[in-house]
Image (tube, rainbow, N blue to C red; front, top):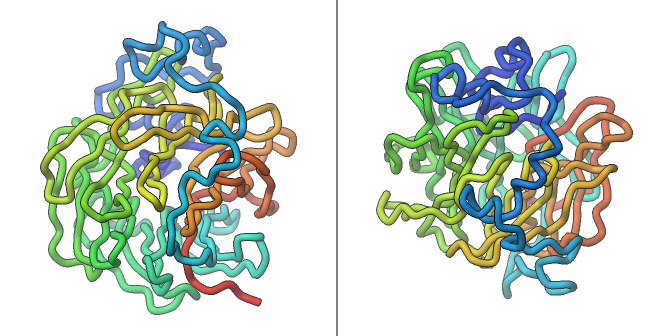
Length: 372
């Protein structure tokens, strides 16, 4: 299974993208929506590396704008994401491909990979733990599209939250557990002008509120203070087939929309550090400059946390609740399969915690007590 950006993996139903044979689901959707400027390429050209040197399109030709240190680039042994009084780390969730289902299902485990438990038996994907660790929000696929639901940490007591035709995905809880942010569209990727917008709603599914209009917003995540939301904004596809995505921040009342990171080739999966000092993301593992990266919410300090290498391609980095570690997808280039890894917040000590016969993806880290 290819590592495709969540921005559009679910939106295309995945089977469509596989049929098109393109390396990025975002590319597929933009082609279908009529907004892609160039066709996708299955073989990114080495020349791309020379163009990924800055903090945005105009800076790509100006080397030196991005800190390039290896592991530990965010401050050596300094823990950059933690804060006093942070909650203890608990169980993690992730998805695992089920050959019989022909799709993904959600699993839970301890953060060392032990005590794995399957939670869903229907096609389901992105997931997030409530702050108190008592519920898991997730998206799933039904007859009328992609919808949101919550469940207990053992997979029981599922409650569907959204019902409208179209797309509702990428749920993330607010820090107080009272609201959920998500991306949504009343249309499907094969319809002209398709794009998703950023929304919030109460945790029971009521009080839905649209925050963005007229832009392709994906993968929203609340700031630790609960007053802002960071999200990806897809702007197109480059000549090599990599999606161009920016990171924006908006207030939770829909005001003060501003850009944090200009569009970069392969940018995806923003997440906010528990102390609020950093927004992390990754560059597509298939990109020549693939890496886990971080930037301050004001757009300053853009830097590499850890580069992907010949062994592991990193994707979807998410923070531990205490801010000391990062759970990250790691494509094993030797075994040709997606695994899950954990590393220190400074990029050190990357190691595999989940390795199964089937690809795994979509990590989340909560506070639900560990199993023993």
